[in-house]
Image (cartoon, rainbow, N blue to C red; front, side, top):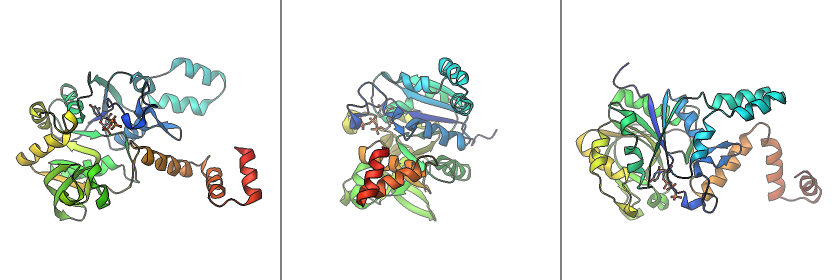
Length: 303
Ligand code: UTP
C-alpha cells in the first residue's frame, strides 16, 4: 500500500437539515429518497465505486435510520424470502455489504469542519475523502474517483469544483484558481459564500474533497466562523497556506439535493432515467405540460 492510497471516506450527516423542515424534524435529511434510494446511499455507492473500503458516517441525534439502513434487516429479509422476492432480497442484503461502516456521533451540530474533525481517530495518519451526501453527482466515472486519480499524481489536497452561474456564487465556497491544465487548477485562495462582486472565479466547491491528515491539527485550532460554525473552508484556507492545494473540475451532472428546488430537479431527472418508471413518468410530464383532452384524462385515471 502506498501512502497516497485513499481508503477511507467521511460522510458528514449530522446537520439539522433546516431547509427541509418539517420533513427533517425527526427524520434525517440524508434518508430523503431520490425515487427509491436515500440520498446517502448515492454517496456511499460513489465512494465504493471510487475504491473506498471504510466509510465513516458522522451522525447525531435523530439519525438512527442511517445506521439501520446500512445494517441487515433480518425480519425484512425473512419476509422477502417467504414471499419469493429473491431479487429484492439480494438488493437489500447487498446494501449492508457495500463497505465497512463506522459511525461517530457529533453531539452538537457545530459545523462541517467540526463534523470532519470527529473522524480524526478513525482516519489516523492517512489521506481521506470527504463526501457531502446532499450533492449528487451523476457521472460515468464516479466524481470522487476523478479526484482520487488526480490526488495520486499531485499528492496535495484536492477539492472537487464545478462552474456555477455568477449570480449563484454566494451559495458556495469559491476558489481563486491558477490554471495548470484543462480542468485542473492550483488553489491560490478560497472564500466561503462571497458576494458576486467579491468572487475570485465562478468555480464552486461541490462537496467532494481528498484531504491529507494535516487538516486535523488545523481544524483543532479553527475558531467558529460564519453562523458560529466551525467551517471546513476556514481550515482549508490555512492548509492552502502551508501546502499545495488543487481544484479539479469534476465531469458529470451535479444536483444540489440539499435544497428543495435542487432536490425536485434531481428527483425528476432520476425518475426519467429509471427504466421501470421513466417512460410512463415522461408521458405524464408531457401531458402535464401540453394537455390534450383525451391523453390527459387517460393519465389521470392511471395515477
Ligand atoms: P449543510 O448546511 O448542507 O446541511 O451541511 P444541513 O446543516 O444539514 O442543512 P441546512 O443547511 O440546515 O438545510 C453540509 C453537510 O454537512 C453536514 C450536513 O449533514 C451536510 O451533509 N453537517 C453540517 C454536519 O455533519 N454537522 C454539522 O454540524 C453541520
